[in-house]
Image 1 (cartoon, rainbow, N blue to C red):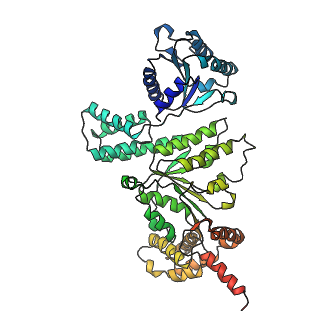
Image 2: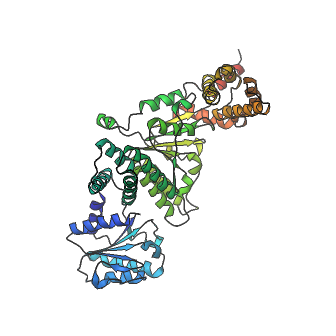
Length: 509
């Protein structure tokens, strides 16, 4: 159902007070005006704090700088006269006792009258005493079809012609921007180059980065890492390679649904975050990073509003990868008692979206402590698969050494005995291996020579790996994965093998 369909339905059903949270004031007012015409040419009255009511010469300026008078104007019109009253930025006055009481009185009165109050605001802020009388209606960002119409209108106005493939690429890149921003960035592209070209895609992407930064919720993360930068994790790599084309139209025609996402659970420093970045680069999709802590605000309703804004923006930028790092720390052990249930509502909105989303937003969540995650998060349907990322086996450690040394010493990589290094460091994670190499570089640099295999081993001897300091927690995590609750990201788990070896050695002959 489109916005116009939903709005017209609410108007016909005589919903007295409708709240539309959107930053596209001009566009939503245009949509309301079109719906008002479809509903028998209903008059539309628009009020703002500075100019009062506008549009009707007889009432121009009424209610200027007086939000209570703006509401009293609704009663001024005959009870049988249909009308739509748009109140701009009215959320700023909802905490006022007189305004709140007047709205609740009007809610009773307007149920029997063909009048509707529409609050248009850039953010959703509803006081507790008005939560039962206000109906929230979302106004989505421009669809692909709307953007196409706007691009064609702009090209017609400038008498320019572009290739259909370039136009489709520009339209796809514009998804996630408001109509006003689309007009500005396209006008900027035409003013700088005289026409729209494939190179203008980067200009549009920069505009996207700007708006994502302004939300202060999502971060437009540059993904430069490649799948080849990941040592080991062969099962996970195979799974990802099979789904590389799942976002294409060909996959839709085949009947394959959009991939939902992955939950990567495992030990710290084993490459979970690196994998999230590599997925976006490998699939040529934008990478959005969500800090769940930024969803929570201090005002009533602000957290829920930010959650909806995050979902709306991620879906508008689709297809994309949404990376949620250490999700276990964000949603661990909450009961909602200390914050009036805000945490529970945010979590409920988030996991419901995970299960029901139809847009191509591929969610990659990472977690170190699976025990602290709510059971609802692990239910089938939230993610396509849950992978366990354990400590690397010997062959994987060798691959990790090769990845780092090929990047740091591409010309003399053969001088390093990677087989020996992989064998000598059985408890090391990928992050600990990288740190050992960095420390070895410091050793060699301080002695005015290149670092060697012996330097890496010496540096490693000074590092106490997590496998020893947190052996009990890691074993619990391994036991959880071995119980069949997650797939192994590797073909062989180094830590599991060592546990088996230890048990074998302890058993009597």
